[in-house]
Length: 265
Length: 306
Image 1 (tube, helix red, strand yellow):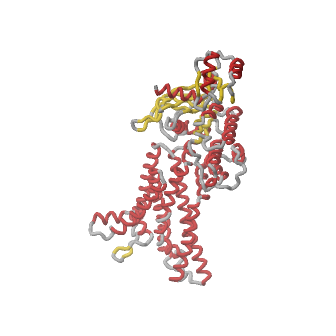
Image 2 (cartoon, each protein chain N blue to C red):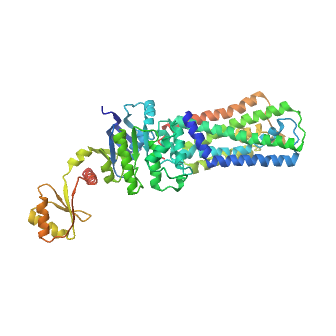
Image 3 (cartoon, chains in turn green, brown):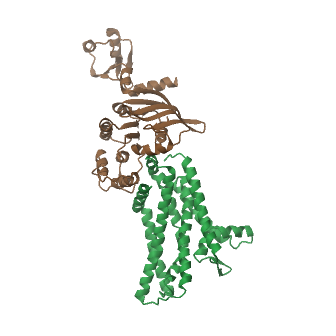
């Protein structure tokens, strides 16, 4: 597995999609910094406050990273490298698990890159502009920030599991990308449009979409002008169990179906 | 000891009601260069995909280096090099980067391995050119380099000389002959260029509509058909008549390429030449043909159809 992960890391390093998205996140971090700086200045309530502001823009990650996960899942079919890897004695399950682990590493890197760079630039800007750096509300901001970053990793991993499952089943990049857009935007629309529905059933669907959970932990879920966040421990647990369940189901389904399928790339 | 590298017993692959492969029994031994011959869709690629673990057989047994259970097959496949259909390469990377990727995947740490295989396929001087800009022949050769990367004991090559120019075909033949002779690498190879396959392979298997209809060694092939005298002349009809009348040759064939073919058996070459010269026949060329894989294959297919 270590060799396979090394190979995937090498591929990603050379991959123009990976490089392009890394560049987009770099630009996004700078744009966000400039926008916040010009709007509210660089005063820092506490050391976690810049990150708390940034995590409310987490949604942005969900429109880009799943598309990469889709390309990454299907590239072996697209270029035919999958046939060389499988015929060299690697099992289908270890191929898929290796791909999934590599994508998790990519997610961690991009979260670190986007939020990390934003934080470094923000604090540097605060120091350069001589803005106030305080220590108010540290505990609250710290809990919200750390939980939002952790949930982002879990939810992006869940999205990657869904999209990579679709990619491995469909086996064609173009079709898999279309399905990825349907999944991401469909979930987003279910969350938004059904939220204010008069039907209790549709409201339940909206409340349980991945996007609703993402909006909740990133501080963007509003009902009747009220910001709804995570209130008690049971909600944190529920929030963590949803992606874990999705990841488990998607991995099992993919391993079983991919294990049985013939490869005709 | 003659080790069995690959053995198939009753190997069958079915898609719905259609059989891609049906009851294939065959053996490849160490040092064999086994040529698989068959028309498009005969089942050659399916057979190779099954060997590579890409396609699951519907029934039958497969063993590689004497191992047949799933876990052991995964392990022994590390000793096999594959080139199945189009070479699997990243178009935006150059040759060295593609090979580096596969070195990581295969766990190869020897830094000399990449220059060695590039040299073996004559691609040492391609520089940083991306695969995107490679000709089909160059891609085929790099695909072969990938297959050679893990120093395989068994090579499975599906149409490896596709798209190669004549010198490229000769180079690949030399590489494969060297591997088989010097390193005892067994090779399972398919090609539609039967003349080339005849020069290379030591054993042939003919697959027709998913069935192995004949297995024959190169020696048996040579013995199977009689040698023929081929005469090229401007006046085919007149020459054929003279041969009939003067030399009492009953069976004369005029081939599609405009040659008179007669069995060498019972014909005195000197007498034949003098008769044709006496009768003023202009001979453009005369040669002795060895048994031909192409003819053998066509006869076999015709027999199978009838």
